[in-house]
Image (cartoon, rainbow, N blue to C red; front, side, top):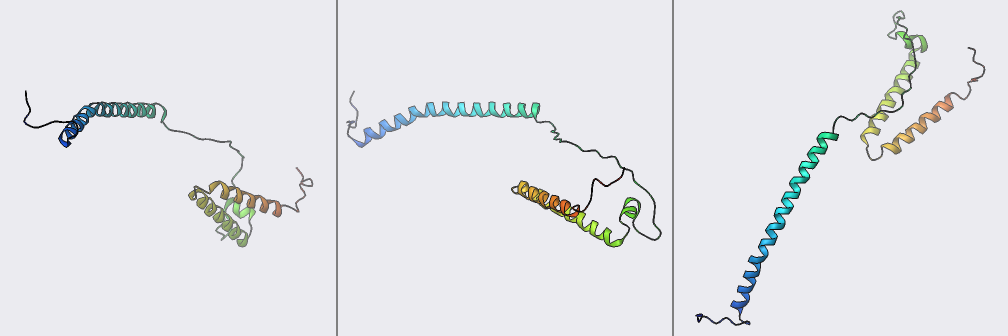
Length: 149
């Protein structure tokens, strides 16, 4: 059987035909690999979902707790907005304003520290150092051994 055109090894038609045949033959393993990848991704998603359902429940993180008993004195000083503990201890408006400013400053510091996720440890450690230094400075003249029971 004689072909109407000449197929020699060095002609462009022969080379194109061989390349097309090789492309078609190599599409078979490519589709097999795609099926394996699809199957393994489905297995991965099923495994991830199963692990999430088994281990992904509510997480509770706790730490040491210091419990201090205290009593709240509920009385009202005449004409004063301070009641209870603050009226007994602070005894003046200036002290109450200073205490409110300190508490407000601590809340602002805690809020900003928690918002700055990348620098929370550094900011928290630095803030704790300043608070500790302030407590040491403010209590430097207290004679702890002279306090009676």
